[in-house]
Structures are given as C-alpha cells and as structure tokens.
Amino acid sequence: MRLVLFGPPGSGKGTQAGRICSRFGLTHLSTGNILREEMSAGTELGLRVGGIVRSGALVSDEIVNELVFSRLDAAGGFLLDGYPRNLTQARRLDEHLGSGRRLNCALLLEVPDAEVVRRLSSRASCSACGFTGSVSHGGVCPSCGGPLSARPDDGEDVVRRRLAEYHSSTAPLAAFYGDRLRRIDGTGTEQEVWMRMENLLRGLE
Ligand code: AP5
Image (cartoon, rainbow, N blue to C red; front, side, top):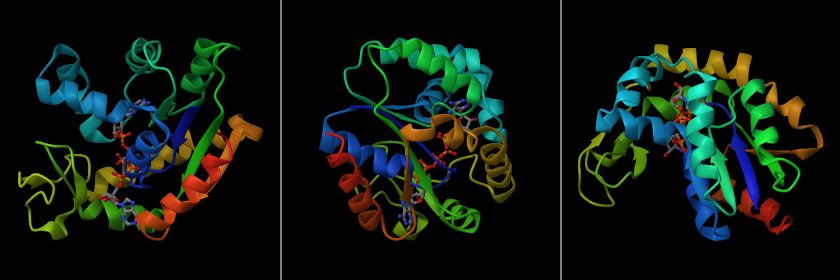
C-alpha cells in the first residue's frame, strides 16, 4: 500500500503511523522525524532548518521534497506522515510517483483544535528510544527508562502557529485528494482510533 497520513499537529499521526506500518508492513516516512534527526545530529541541513521548525513555520518545499523522494524510491509500500503539507508538495508527489505507483489513499485524521492544544501541552518524548507519550509518566520513559522531554515546538504559542499553518496550507489537501480521501475520527483513545484505522485499511488490502 502507498498511503499519505495528514491532519492537524497532535492529531496522533505519529502514534497511528507506528501501528499502521507494523501491521501492514509499510515503511514509515515522517518528514518531522527526519528534520528533527538532522537537527539533533547538528548537520548542515539541521542547522539550516532548526529555527524554522522551532518557530512552527514550514520548511521550504525544495528541501522537503528532496528528503522525501530520495527515501521514497528505496521503499516498497510506504506511509508518508506529515508530507505533503501543502498543494505544491502534493502535486510534486503525484508527479514523482507517476501512474505506476499511485497513492491508494490519503488518510485525514480529524481532531478539534482544543484537543490538539490539550494533547501537545502534555506531550513528552524520549530521545533515547523515540517513545512518545504524556508528561504524566513522571519524566521517565516507560519503555527504556531514559529521560522524557517536551518538544521545543510544543509551547502554546508555537502550537497555535502550527495550527494556523495547518488550516491555511494543509487542510486544503482534503479537496485536492477528492475521491482518494478517507476521513478518520481521531478523537477517543489511541486504541479506538486504531480500530477505525485498521478497519478502513483492511478494506484496501
Ligand atoms: P511534524 O513532526 O510533522 O509535526 P506535526 O504535524 O505538527 O505533528 P506532531 O508530530 O506534532 O503530532 P502527531 O499528529 O504526530 O501526533 P502524536 O502522535 O505525536 O512537523 C514538525 C515541523 O517540521 C513542522 O512544524 C515544520 O516546521 C516541519 N515540517 C515537517 N514536515 C514538513 C513538510 N512536509 N513541509 C514543510 N515543513 C515540514 O500525538 C500527539 C500527542 O497526543 C502525544 O503525546 C500522543 O501520545 C497523544 N495522543 C495520540 N493519540 C491520542 C489519542 N487518541 N488520545 C489522547 N492522546 C493521544
């Protein structure tokens, strides 16, 4: 399967992407994760994009397209998480895939803004193993015992900027994908969302 997963910040894309990829044997490509890895490694690209990511604005289309296409060509089935992020990226992706590797569908995870702000104000992740959960774990990763920390772009002002960016640049992808779009209610527990997701994707296998 070749899938795109999009939705507001904090809608649970990363959480559901992990489950989808292990259940359906897909390669998980998250542009946010790739950019954060470049930033933590202090690469030239990481230094170039760090300020943009921390501010909640979007990195340039040229940079992101190149990051995605170089990895996409090595993947069989894939799930793109956080890409495309605007109409320019979506059109370039379709062109790049051509008629031989068309997307099966674009999944839109829908969560109201107030819930996004609530989730992101308590999100914490582990730099050692990548676990993502809530600060309610007491600052200690329940998976590997490493330290949990908040993402630098999860402060309330930056989250509001990311939400504004989502509504102006990314939400129009719903109309772009038309009959390739599948909407999923992203509210409820992680397990409830997963049940909806799995039911939908089983129908596409
Ligand atoms: P990116 O990393 O893509 O961030 P995002 O889209 O803002 O999404 P998040 O990672 O914040 O949230 P998520 O939907 O994955 O939710 P999660 O599963 O963690 O992008 C970051 C930045 O990189 C951008 O701002 C931009 O600068 C740059 N960038 C990335 N891609 C780009 C592109 N294509 N073009 C240009 N720039 C780009 O869940 C959130 C929290 O909620 C977690 O704590 C989780 O445990 C919890 N949770 C999950 N599901 C539930 C549930 N059902 N109930 C309760 N809590 C839940």
